[in-house]
Structure formats: structure tokens, C-alpha cells
Length: 256
Image 1 (cartoon, helix red, strand yellow):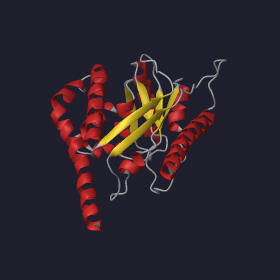
Image 2 (cartoon, rainbow, N blue to C red):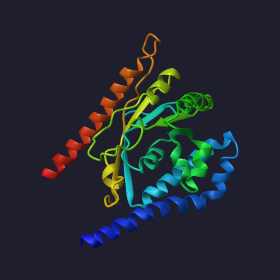
Image 3 (cartoon, one colour):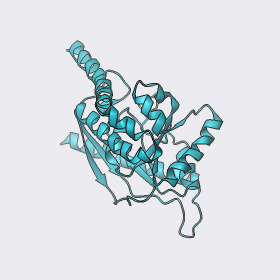
Image 4 (cartoon, rainbow, N blue to C red):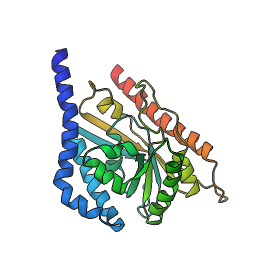
């Protein structure tokens, strides 16, 4: 039985990449046209959302979104969430309709086909290079000027230790939000690690819940920027508490 499970998991993991690349191939002509100019990005974003939903459903995932408040479609935000799975990108795209740009690590540009569009649409950062980290701020300002939002996973990557509940947050997202006066929208993804973690022989189809928490302002009522370290701790606590709430619900459900 153990061997059968491992074969199933291996095939299912490979299927993730097959679905991801197959949907890109099907949409390729339309995706290519939308990345020819900067003005095409809103259309690319719509296609990216379709791609994300197809990948999730193709893997047997279905999602349920709980929203604390309605977002202004004409406003730019900083979207942040806990990061535990390769599906976090897809679930973020499926959950948020405000066009946004990911800030992500440069290594993702090496993924065949996906990397082609990643390089042309996202803000890439080489975390080992201070110059690259500084360029992110200039690139972010260009996107904000075009009415786009920004998305960063503030843990900086998926923790190698899978037992970590929520890793420490890095400063980048909060520095960007503070300097550009972007309200922060925290999201909680409680199921992604269980559904498709970075542990190869793990995961299963099923429900992925999303909770979009209330907007956190980065400017006080007096117009002064809120200290970014305070912002970072406050937002991390909100996401941590949100994860704990889901964990307690799941534990209570298992007892009944």
C-alpha cells in the first residue's frame, strides 16, 4: 500500500507541472500579445487568473474565500500572505481581482515557458545583491504609477523546516508599502501546506480556504507614515492569529 501511495503522489506531483505548462501552451498566443507592451498588463493579469484557476481545479483543489471588507478596484494595495506551497501564487491570483504584480525571486525565471512570462511581467529580485533589492523600489513605483498593486510573500520563501508555523517576516514589503503609502491587505492561506507542500510524497486534492483580512493603513490619521517595524509585527500577528483560528477550528472538528 505504501508503494501504491508513493506512485500516486509521484504521478500527481508531475501532473502539477504538466497542467501548469499545458494551460500556458493553450493560452500562449493571447499571453504573448499581452506582454508586448506595458499597457497590455491588465489583460495579461486576467489571463493569469484564468491560468491559476485552471491549475488549481486541474489538481483537484477548490477554494473558498472569506472577505473582511470590499477592496476599492481603483486603488493600489500591498498584498501579503503566508508562504508554504507552490500553489500560493495560483491561490493569490484566484483570490484577488485587483491587478497586481508579484515581487519574486529571480530563480523562478529559469522555469521553462513560465519563466519567459515571469521575466516580462513580474518584479524580480536577487536577494543576494543589494543593488537588485534597491531596484525593486524603482520598479514598484512604475507599477503603482500605472494603477497596479504589489504582492510579496514577506517570509521571503518557503521555510526549509516544514514544522515552522509562520516564519519571520522580512522588511521589504513593509518598507515598500510605507514609502509608497500603500494600504496592506493581509491574506491567510491555512491549507496550502497540507494540499501541496514542498515535501514530495505528500499532499492531496481538496479544499483551500482563504481569509482576506481587513486593510491595514500605512499612514496615521495625522498623515504621518506608521513605523514599518510596527507594521511588520502587526501584520504578522494578524496572519498568525488567522492561521491559529483555522487550526483551532480544524482540531475542534476532528474531535466531533
